[in-house]
Image (cartoon, rainbow, N blue to C red; front, side):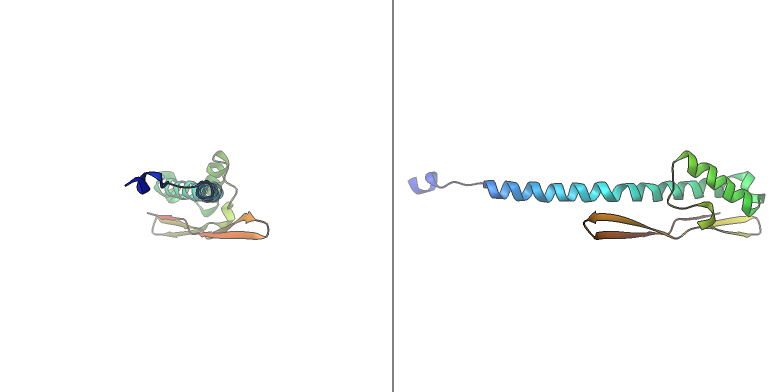
Length: 122
């Protein structure tokens, strides 16, 4: 019974360092990815707002793109421009979509390429 009380249990110093390293790596990775996903969500929100706007139903493609440009400037979105948005109108219904990619440097010459396809239609 004395043998069990002398034996140490738990995580060692090397284990703690490894766990901290993994947590830091994941935190840095997340901090690099989250802004790209937030911008994509903002772009989708802008497209949905434009599609649901009653004034935009009869607007020209130029007016729709101008509306996107104004809204994107307010949200500081530079990932895509108004020319990157595909606008299609069928019988008063608007459909907006875009395809774009974001290159995120990870470490050294390693990068991540994220592809997004936001869209909205009414």
